[in-house]
Amino acid sequence: MAAALVFRLHDKAPELLRDVLLERGWEEYDGGEREEEDWNLYWRSSAFHSSQYHSLLPWQRLNHHPKTVGITRKDCLARNLRRMRASCGSTLYDFSPSSFILPNDYTRFLAEYDKLHLTGGASLYWICKPVDLSRGRGIFLFQDIKDLVYDCSVIVQRYVSDPLLISGYKFDLRIYVCVKSFHPLTVYIHQEGLVRFATEKFSLSSLGNLFAHLTNSSINKLGPFYRAEKESVGRGCKWTMSKFRHFLRSQDVDELPLWQRISNIVTLTLLSIAPSVPSCPNCLELFGFDILVDVGLKPWLLEVNCSPALTLDCPVDVSVKRGLISDLIDLMNYTSTDGLRDGAFQKQKHTQPCFRRPSYDPRSSQTQTLPLLKTVPQSKGTNPGRRALVADQSRRLPPVNPTTACAAGVRIINSTARKTHSDKTLHLILGSHSRTNRHTRPGETDVSQKTPEIRPRGPGFKPSAVAWKLPNIYSGSRVPVTAPLVETTALTTRCSSSPSRRLHPDVPV
Image (cartoon, rainbow, N blue to C red; front, side):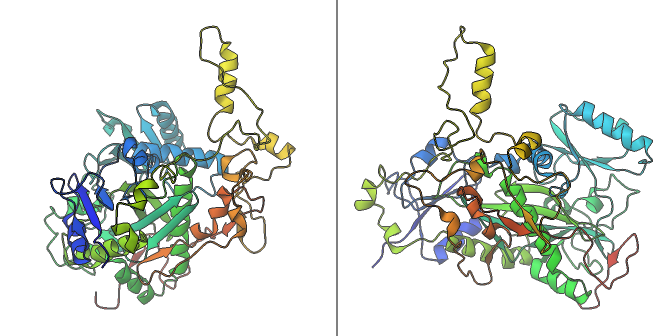
């Protein structure tokens, strides 16, 4: 009989996780009865310390990848998307509203504000969010810069003032994304999710009414109309994603392009941090992508949540999150031998490291485009210019200069993200000196010639339509990687295309 798998919970881990694991026959870790390393899954809401990644044993899993704060913290996400927009073009990375990190970007924000105001942008609206708070805390909207008051680091974004409404209510989509690996990038998008509604009707004349402008359930469940029967929405403030899909079909909306765009957003966002995330095959992480859909049916990325809430506040939460956790455990691919947790596995700790840095080394002889430089000691006698040169050459992901790259025959994406083929594909190619397109090292397998393994997962997690085609950009392949290019026009629909577009269901909801 196989030994039971053991889970370990820490710092306010969700009770739902404990319930699901116990139902599946797992046992909970008890520090008083078990050895320190006698567990299979360690789950916590906050990040793990780097030493915990280095000490992982082959049978152990963690629910966070290291160094993913680059997308889960609002200011880091804005900074990374800005960098990718500058590198790959604003057409490709056009899914995030203009963002400014204050106080650092105050001068840039003021210049943009004045420019838009002078060009007739008096009707522009802005939203201010503290960078290190969640659940809608500290958020406010403003139109006049005189109303911008803050006492901590904040991010100011262009407010999407024309959201798609359902019977007058604003909503957003909580997309659950599971990343099994960043090297190669392996992404799964759960087929079920949440549609979160504001509990009062949307109106730009009342910017101070957060119950009309914010969709956070932690805020709206405190509103006066949370339990009221709202037109089309019903009681509460949530739908399941399957109900939303049924609703779109009832309105004769072609939903496929919308989900393709959302899949693109997920993949391109994760690509912004993939080169900097250390490889740790014993990790798996669940992210919550918050997506807003405007009247043109274009999805906008609002933020990415680390440890999305798994609390059960309503029946919709129960139907979505219980299956989500179960499918997440299935993706971890535990085997019967993982329950042993001793014996031969203990010896593998030193022969099969579970944590390693990305294998890119800018000084490697296999990297032809970078000169071979010795590490220069950082002493007072070292020429400052020489130190700067070494630091520049030692960066993990050197920048691509369009001028020099084109002269060297390297194909890159220009600022207009032009179509390179008539079959509507877009090349994602970086310079040959980039780690994401490096040469295969001696002893390594060129996985670019292999077909990515796609395992059927039933109704739960589904491989991202874009992500599963991208793993070989980390293998050193010279073959261009293609990803679907989604048109930027609005989705085909037979609904009215009035400026204040609203969807009215003709089916009971």
